[in-house]
Amino acid sequence: MKNLRQQVISKLRTAIILVAAFGLGVVVTPSAHSQTFNLLYSFCSQSNCKDGNTPIAGVIQDAKGNLYGTTSLGGTSNWGTVFDLDSSGTETVLYNFSYVNGDGANPFGSLIRDAAGNLYGTANYGGPNGQGLVFKVDQTGKETVLHNFTGGTRDGCAPYAGLIRDKAGNLYGTTVACGAYGYGMVFKLTAAGKEKILHSFAGPPTDASNPFFGASLIRDAQGNLYGGTYLGGAFGSGAVYKLTASGKETVLYSFTGGADGCLPYGAPVMDKLGNLYGTTSQCGSSFAGTVWKLSKGGKETVLHTFAGTDGAYPQAGVILDAKGNLYGTTTSGGANSRGTVFQLSSSGTLTTLYSFCSLSSCADGTNPAAELIRDANGNLYGTAQYGGSGNGGTVWKLTP
Image (cartoon, rainbow, N blue to C red):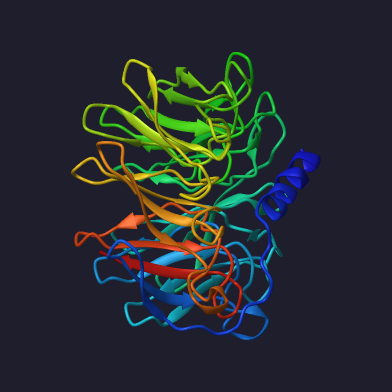
C-alpha cells in the first residue's frame, strides 16, 4: 500500500503544472459575465507558509460568514492546517498538523461543522500507523483523533475525501486504498468512535474502486449513500455507486472512457427527483472531461464536454441551485489555461463565470480543484491550489 500511496501523492504533484513564484497583484476586479471576483486571502503570506499552503479542499461557511477549510501543506510543521477566515479577511490557523506522536498530516478533504462549532475532517497521512485518520477540532483549536486507520485488509488507508454526518452524529467517509481487496472502502464511524466497514471495493470489472480526491459521499432521506470512484467499474474508467443502509452496494454506472468521460474525482449531487450530477476529470469527446447526469434508472447523459477554452480537467463535483443550474470548477483551461469557475444552466448552456490568472502575476490564484459553496445571495466561494501573492493558493468569492 505504500507504493500506491506514493503513486497517489506523485499524481497530485504532477497532474497539474506547477506555477512559478508570483508577485503581488490587485485584490478585486470585475470579471466577465457580470461577476465580481473578490480575493479573500492569499496563503504563504507568513514566513515559511505558517498560515498554510496548497488548499486542495474547498471551504464551508457559518451563519456569521466565517469560512473554514484545510491546507494540505504549510503550517508550523509543513504538514497542513485547519484554518478560519473571518468576514473581514483575517485568517486564524486553528490547528497545525505535525505528523508526530500519532498526529495526522496532509488533509485533502473538506470539513464539516456541527451545531456546537466543532469541525470534522480527515488527514490522508499520518497517525500511529501512517495510514491516515479522522479528526475533530473544537472552537479552541483542540484536536481529538476519532479514528486511526490501520490499513491492510481489515481497515482502510489514505482517506482523501471529506466526511458527512447524520443526525445521530455518525460520520461516513471513504478511503482510496486498503480494505479487503486493496481498492478502498466506505466506512461509518459512530459518535462513540466505533468504526464499521460498510463496503470494501472489489475493483473492476464487477465493482468500483479507489475513491479519490473530493470523492465525498452524499446521503438520501432513506439512509442510502452515493458516491463516485476514480477507477473501477466494468471498463476500469470509474463508476458511480449506491450503498444501502444495510450495506448492499450497486454500481449505478460504469464510465466507458469514451465520450461519456472517465476518471471522476468529486462527489455527486442529487436533485429532488433522484437524478445525480457530477463531473469526469478526463475523456469526453474533447478529452478534457465532462459534466454528466445520471437518471434514477441509471441512464447517463453528457450535459457538457469541456473543450479547453471553456475549461478542462475538473477535479471537483458540481453544486445545484433551486433553478437547476450547476456550478463547478476546472483545474485547467479557460482564457488563461489556469482553470475556471463555470455555470451550466438547466437548458445545457455553459457560461464561464471566471478564468483564473486574470490578475497581474496570477494574484487571484490558479488551478482550482475544490468544490464550491453558494450562499443565499448567490455568492460563490472556493479555493485555488496555487497562485496568489504568496504562491500558496487563495480563498476567493464570486459575486453575481
